[in-house]
Image 1: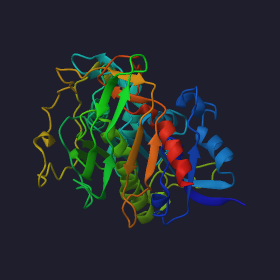
Image 2 (image 1 turned 90 degrees about the vertical axis):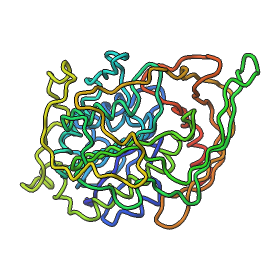
Image 3 (image 1 turned 180 degrees about the vertical axis):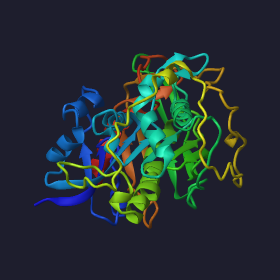
Image 4 (image 1 turned 45 degrees about the vertical axis):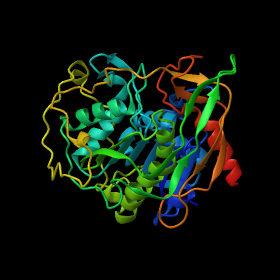
Length: 407
């Protein structure tokens, strides 16, 4: 018997927490794909065919007739939503959320010019979301600056420019109450840690204990259904801030923007996913392939004008000075002083994290995370990490252990 429901597709690397699943008032299925070992996320998604959503649902949610589709990624698992957006089902996705995980190579690192072709699926979906509110594209970043490839901040800048045609801060809506400088109670704590070089036995890198009582919001931009939230780093190494994105920001975005959107609106008000004619009504957004990108834009980094209604930028109480927009036409830039390379050390530290619990706030239980490997900035080089990764890519084993500990 077929059941009509909204569907959220995510990965075991960063699934939707149970507390946030409970916030969805309409029938909703949460499909959690296994984190691919030894293969790319794109390869995993492409194995389901040119229209992978159909194959994914047939395997992981048989009997479900999808109404709206959302996809979610954190860190490395943002490659999964990208693959879905690049597929034949890209135009039928209602919501895509990327938590501190969109990276790309640089065309010219000194000028800060990002390889836009690698961001095409995100750029096209964001552009569609910016036109109206029938799609939601939510992107968050920490302030980690990788040494050889574009940071999540730089890629978010590219996506914003492509979608809106400007570098200016646009705010067609204010943030919901409590999101700017979000209070975290009880505090989220990343314990101090250190990693030894397995060859010399000496401490190669260490990071401080970092306690978060407030989410360090830096800047936000919103053009209709496109929302980009940037956060600063409280931990100089970035380790604590990347973990904060997973533990606090991810559930906050799901609860505040996706759950509230789907609870409030009928499926036909968004982007309907249609299978074999089911739900194929005039009220649904047509199946526009979401990866069609103007090829001339790849050659010309100059923003193209696009008129979008704005109620801002509105000054925010306590907003730091870097909420101001860069001059129009300015490409994303990288610091003149590069941080030390990101490296891998094989000796595992033990880290204890504490996350909020109870109430409507994002929550999870206290867990002891033993990481199989740790990425860090600085110290003795063991091996330089290549590709689209960031400071804590190998949280995977620790997260698995935490989920196992929670039962």
